[in-house]
Image (cartoon, rainbow, N blue to C red; front, side, top):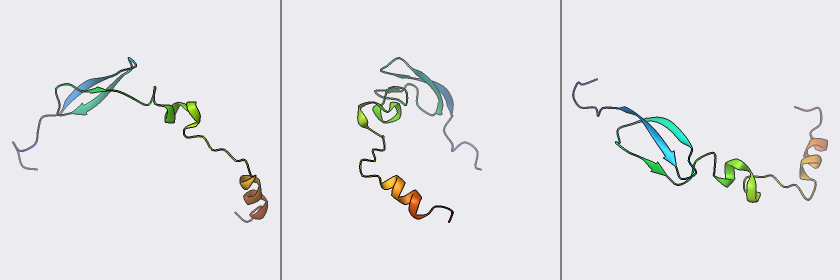
Length: 70
């Protein structure tokens, strides 16, 4: 690699709006985020986001059809 062309990387503590702190490597001086993996509904599974709902029995139908083949 060429010397002197790459920015200096710093270990930075990122604070989320929920109060959680994460450590990341970045070239920024300061970074704030509104949501993180601890407070986002997709990761928490609240509010129905990210959940698999099987109301028609599709999973059981698939398992029955391909039982023993894989």
